[in-house]
Amino acid sequence: MPAVVIIGAQWGDEGKGKATDLLAGRIDYVVKFNGGNNAGHTVVVGDEKYALHLLPSGILTEGVTPVIANGVVVDIEVLFGELDALSARGVDVSKLLISANAHVITGYHRTMDKVTERFLGKRQIGTTGRGIGPAYADKINRIGIRMQDLFDENILRQKVEGALNVKNHLLVKVYNRRAIGVDEIVDELLGYADRLRPMVVDTGLVLHQALERGETVLFEGGQATMLDVDHGTYPFVTSSNATAGGAATGSGIGPNRIDRVIGIVKAYTTRVGSGPFPTELFDESGEFLRKTGFEFGTTTGRPRRCGWYDAPIARYTARVNGVTDFVMTKLDVLTGLESIPVCVAYEVDGVRVDEVPVSQSDFHHATPIYENLPGWSEDITGARTFDDLPKNAQDYVLAIEAMSGARISAIGVGPGRDAIVVRHDLLD
Image 1 (spheres, rainbow, N blue to C red):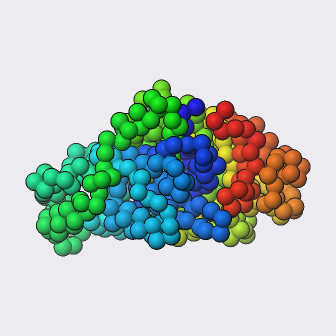
Image 2 (spheres, rainbow, N blue to C red):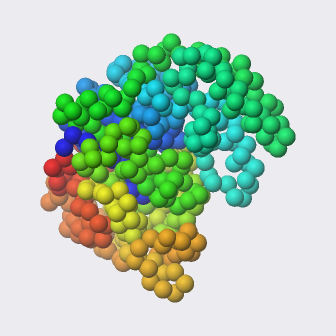
């Protein structure tokens, strides 16, 4: 099974890095195919904790070639900062490859992101302010800066001038900000060129050749399905395709090369930023999940909104992505609860709805219909087989599996690298 996609099956922060780590030793390439440094993975290796924001988590695995593909937008300052921090801790980062077609986040993208979000006031989307949305907007408007442009000063200058022509009018006349100089942007980007040059290649060709050799390539999605610009809770979404289909367009491989799609779900649900969230909790139960699960953003530090597991969301993401396997994370967080509610459907205007409503308005007003499952009090962090789990924990997993549209092949029972129960081989 040479091509595997890992995607978030909720609103992000599900623990995709842990699933990638589970396949360590069996993969040759790990590819980030969408997003930027607006989301992160936390990976625990022994006593060491690594917070990755832009880099694929496979960079921590010896022998794996990490790839930032064409669907990613890259803040080069963040990239180098992350590489330097890993190098200082003894991690080999020399194998990193970056697509020549990946777009660059510039200083003016970050500025536009922040001022636009403030301008929206109470209609804010909840962006991280890191320039991701404006960089993707420039990409679609065909005025973006690509990695390959940094190696031709004339082309780079022309593109920066074109991008700033309109943006400076907006900054000065609408947002009452100073204009941004072309030279300051060009000089900054050119300063990165020499260090970047050995990393920047035709990654689509590299990945094609790897698959032709029968090597295993893992495509690691940023954010999650419910934040996908087409299939998520629009407009409260990210600016890229975080679904399995995005792995093909975001990396340059054909969709028929994908063999398995692994969806990551928490044993409950979280999201960051604005937008509808039917099972969100505003009481002590929500605070319990936040504190016990340490639900704070890896990149932003923002407290996450917390709620119970939402089975219609899981069924929706299984359908949209063609999920073959789920990995459930953070089951241990639920330990100690006497009863655990699970959303099995919604009520919309007095009518039961079993699937995610297509109308955003209906989804915003959806009230969860819960089924309560018995909890457990036993410590499960040492479990390594399904039989090691207490019966109520087993029953919870099986009930979730029956509701969610695909088998649950692995279960995270703690933050450690080996704190996982494997039920089925993810590559079989």
